[in-house]
Amino acid sequence: MSEQGAFGTILKINTGTLTLVVSVEEVSFPVQSKVIDEVTSHDSPSGYYEAISVGVRRAEPFDALVTWDVAQATHAQFVTSFNADTAIGMSIEDPGGAEVMSFSAHIESIARLTPLKNALRARIRIHPTGAATIT
Image (cartoon, rainbow, N blue to C red; front, side, top):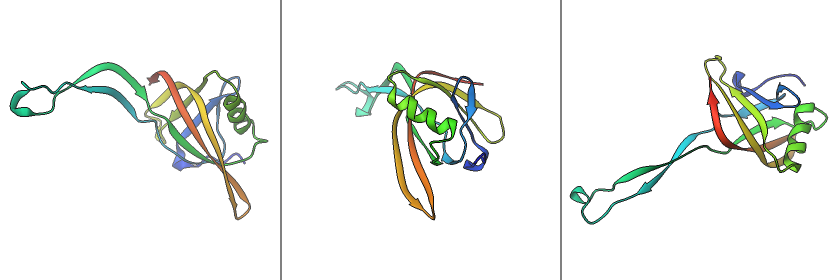
């Protein structure tokens, strides 16, 4: 099972070094967002909503769907990381290699899905923490 799915998107997890997660069927880059606070007041021009950035940014949690095989080192690392309370290094790269996002993350959940045509799947919820680096 060394195929890479998700139309060429490369997801890696630290197993000693950043290692390609095998059998990824579906994954998206984490959405980057910043916290905005509403500051609309009675004297806001024409009564329009006003907002300010509070200076907090984050990479949002995201899911990866894999054809699950816990015997695979990268899949076993998801289980190990789920059982730990520390974040693990990860990266995701677009199919064309234009951007690589590197980050630390907690494995928030692993949902093993009912086998379909003898293939067990898992939806893994990855929760980035700290600053992401994009190169």
